[in-house]
Length: 65
Image (cartoon, rainbow, N blue to C red; front, top):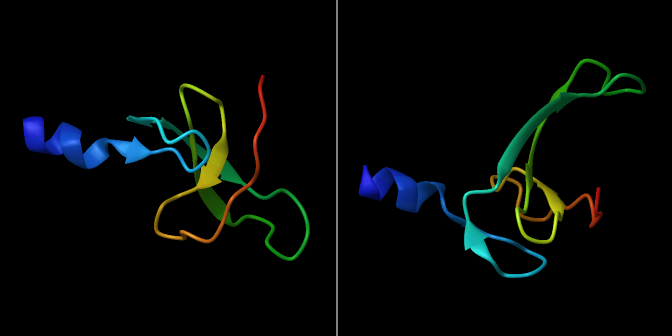
């Protein structure tokens, strides 16, 4: 199980904290991508949100809630 947890650890692109981020799955509700699913991660420390690591150039920005 230790290797699995290590694979789930991700470095935040904003603050650099390495941890298991919150996983968020959403769906576009309008526009050309209506119905398309999007997978996002949220840092537990700084609350930065980014698109799944398979698309390393995408980032939705930073925000605190």
